[in-house]
Image (cartoon, helix red, strand yellow):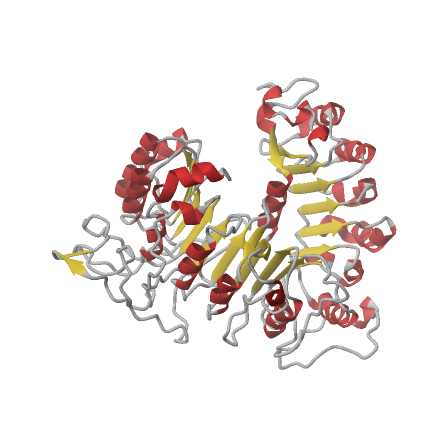
Length: 615
């Protein structure tokens, strides 16, 4: 059975027969190679599964379990032949939780996904954390994925315990929500001890992916050597927090230490961040990158005005290898560079999500260069009829023919629209997002394959084609997620909303339209009903209460808080609701009050493919 063929790195310097800045020596766990079954549902988030490298029972003496030092080591060859890094075996033996570990998870209101071999839980105290990680290191060594939130005022000793215990497991994906806030004074008071040595997890050779959430003021709170030259074999790094000036240098160092990254995601929908050209340039040096997501970022204020025109977008891999996922949201980008990246990747790209305002006087171009198929552009691009595209086998190398997720909320050039119109009838898209500028794409979609659709600012007339297609064969559609933004009269989409949906996102509907829709919504399989409107009130909730006997046990209402304070009534107070529902109010556990940006972030993550380190 193949194992990971990872580059061998130079071990750190020794002092008294022990590496400098190392975790405590302890025997390596005996872990047999094992493959995982894929998740049962598309919503399961995590890797398909990794075969741990063969281990021996001698103490840790190689870099695979050492923390970084400032000593240089050779950079792995990023141009070498692709590694065999994952094997899926649907018959693999599933890891069973021990009684002690199961009790720890249940006591934390956590969950365990047996198929993904994943534990998710929230830790609320130092004692709670120590007990859990002690049990995990002893009885959960075959666990593959850990999603943990640290919901207390943790410190350096807690971090040290976490890092040491993780080294003794076979966890390949670690997701950590650090629950940080944006209190600048508190961050400076915490100093380097708050996050301490959490960054040393990058040098844990068993880990293939790390996700940091809410790691606020990372630069002020971590003790990261800025000139570290050891290299990590990490495949996936997500830093899901606003990028601000005090953290750019440290994030730059982390990314520079991970030349083999396949999946990099930076920023958050919650707050707008900045990116300095130096940070963007180190991203551009990632030669194996397959997924690049940059959320809600714009220029750093320290960039001189004269440089902005030339350094807006430098996050372009320097190799000629294509990127399969490109997600860019925010306010300002450099269109020429972004267009170059998309054009070079146009044959292989599977996920394309663009959400940003039009650069003054310029349309965005979806280029077909580098495809080997030629350009579809025409000197007089016209709107072709859908019938002119037979469902024939797609040509090899056709630009954008690999797309599964397309969300276009930018102003495209006529030639770019023509390119998409030509290829869309051949595609089996899973997600489609359009707005007023891209609404014509609805005429060329095979709706029967869609699982998710996002419609922004469309009128009743714009939806005629969708309505006709729905009435014809809507019952056979796979659609389970719908998002409506700035569609005032959502009643016009009752033909869609009456279908069984798992997730419904409603943003800025009229009050009466919202009430009418809620009265006729199909709740049979609905799990998430996300509503954002300043007009939501107790009379609106009373309509939901009248439908409560049709709710399934998972159904929850995500209620977005209005941005303006004067629009916030007591309906946005979770605690004002009773523990048990009444005739006028939903039970407290049915409603979650969220900032609008968090609502948006959750939606984005729900429609994207599950992240994986096997791309």
